[in-house]
Amino acid sequence: MTTPADRNRDSGTRELDVVVYGATGFVGRLVAGHLAQHAPDGTRIGLAGRSAERLEKIRDGLGPSAAGWPILHADSEEPDSLAALAAGTRVVVTTVGPYARWGMPLVQACAQAGTDYVDLTGEVLFVRSSIDSWHDTAAETGARIVHSCGFDSIPSDLGVLMLHERVRSDGEGELADTTLVVTSLRGGISGGTIDSLRLQLDTVKRDKGLRKIAASPYSLSPDRNAEPDLGGQSDVRIVEGSKIDPTLRGWKAPFVMGSFNTRVVRRSNAVLDWAYGRTFRYSEVMSVGSSPLSVVVAGAVAAGLGGLVAGLSFGPTRALLDRVLPSPGEGPSAKTRENGHFTIDVFTETTTGARYRSRVAAQGDPGYAATAVMLGESALTLVHDRDSLPDKTGVLTPATAMGDALLDRLQLAGFTMEVERLG
Image 1 (cartoon, one colour):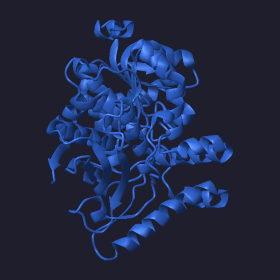
Image 2 (image 1 turned 180 degrees about the horizontal axis):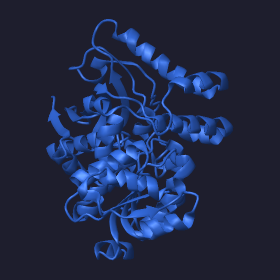
Image 3 (image 1 turned 45 degrees about the horizontal axis):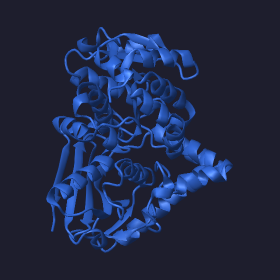
Image 4 (image 1 turned 135 degrees about the vertical axis):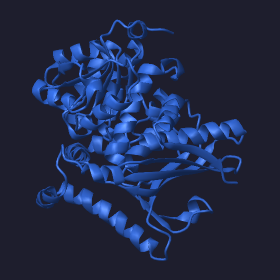
């Protein structure tokens, strides 16, 4: 069904195709730079934020392709400015976080205006609130509100989607035990990510109900009561590689982003009417080598992650950690970003006993360079590939909002996106 919002976007009555909100921030500048270099000719792009002067400086550094980009005033504390922003463009890209603090007014504006929206959040409680508050409105207006379009959580979400599509094509049943393994990773940690973690820890300390939601493996499900009871699905386990797949050696440690990514992937399964399978169990871990000492290293990583959370939860140790952890707006040098990379493998055994592996890999610091590509290409997918998008609106995931259209764009952008049968 074509909604009024779809007709408005498709008829070209909106002045812009994409607006980058927060373009003066570290990641926002990188996203704007990617769009300046790679957006198809004719894509109408604008930059938005609180300071016109700072935005103009960013635009001036992007090269001649960005010279005519308009500068728009928008402030999360001024709802009218966000409403005007949403009404004038087809897609809003936002890097302004922590999203729990600054993000919901923009979600509201886009949902009400029928405007597509993409962000980088890794905040479970923010996404849950977005679903509860604005999914129905967005579904009615034809808006696609797509959270987590960076390293959180596109590799996870599309990695599993690729497995599902290949298994279905081969007639090998449904996905059962499925584990993402971070095979290699080189990159820095974002100050914004740390700030978001601080905020969520503070929130769950004050509210036991929210703490329970954050801890639930199905915290982002459309209907928790409809989810299968598959027992515990821990995000902090260490596991021997051969338990995941016979080809793997060494013990695997918990992956720091697993407690968020797993919930996004499970939401995708539910939004797709559990197409991955009713016995689909999903977890994420990271490789720490294959030596006999890998079990010790994996245990140390698990303890270190627990220590970071505990340290940020306790006032005196938080003050010490804040001195060494990056601050919001800070990021690695250009050389560090260029030298970064990631390879993620997702292993599954299907209900028929077949084994598969998908791989998502890219050059560039995962949280910065590669994330800027993923977020920028998500926006371009929503603008230029509308005829290829899944027929879904509302608060969605990358897989359920963009699916194969985004996968194809990322391949053209140099990402490895592949699936192979292992047995």
